[in-house]
Length: 471
Image (tube, one colour):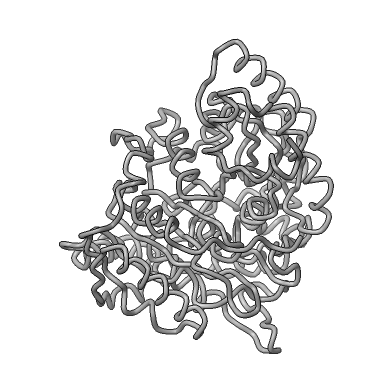
């Protein structure tokens, strides 16, 4: 089988083929390493490539499968991690100069669970410095590029994850999401991103941005792949006191169930302030769901507009608290945009943080009221197409020569569901006229990832597949 053929399979197909010994983990890993060697100098998705480790993982997986000891769908499958996730003996930089030489002594739980499932580690992925931004334009390791157009951002802060999936330099990835950074790269790169319920997945060994908003989760090719990865990484972890003891279902169990008879709410406030192309693509996706038998209803949640302000009021002080070990003494070692956010966070009053934390329950209550009698909510994942690569922090350039503010045009759509902690899936809806990906998000009740994945899978099956980027 050629390398191109090997790289064309998603995790679900790879798992079955490896189990049946139709695909060799060693050959598969060599195909991915070759693809990284060929393309990564252009897309810059990786900070560290662990080729020697990957080959050892693959050889071990191949021997285990040959001996009849198949561990599951990720056994022998090459994956990569956002460089926030601790990997014992392997550099974990957080995309930062300050941690450029940091080598952890233990594994993050997300990687430990994937490793126990037999996954092959390809390396650590590029990102926005310390995850504190939404463009993945990194001053220390270089800007990550959008695989559909290298002049555009992949979204952040998990930009390397989205790019690696679509450039086919990893079969699946782990990203993190504090204000949207799993869903935004998925939206801008044209793949699937799942921010599961807060507490559903352990954050032990994941360098924090904002402790009460952070999520670690899958960025993958398909809804099924995201569900398969969640099956591996979900569940209580005694090392993370905030991880939930809620039972873990089989997240693939309802992927074929469809949406016929489901009532789905369309969030009115998040259909305002989008580009025409985003709105047209979103409305086309809604028509697909209607054609599948779903009943769509407009729902108004005025409180959703407070989401970005609440997220900022919580995120900034929590990030500053973590960075007190370095800031301001090493301020010059930060990129300009992250340094500015640290300086601002350092003078924010504690009362704002306290009030924002108190208001979180109110926002969740309003969203759940809107969900009463409805299975899930729908909205665009971002209000714009991917902007141009820039190092301007929250203000990025557009192809027409203007600028766009990432807070109002992107984070406004994603951050509310970090505040509420609800499971939210980003899924592609098509390409813009300029050939850039567009996306919608499916929002569920806490710990109801099954419904979110069910809706996403039904839409994915019916949607016309996105053409791959011309890399």
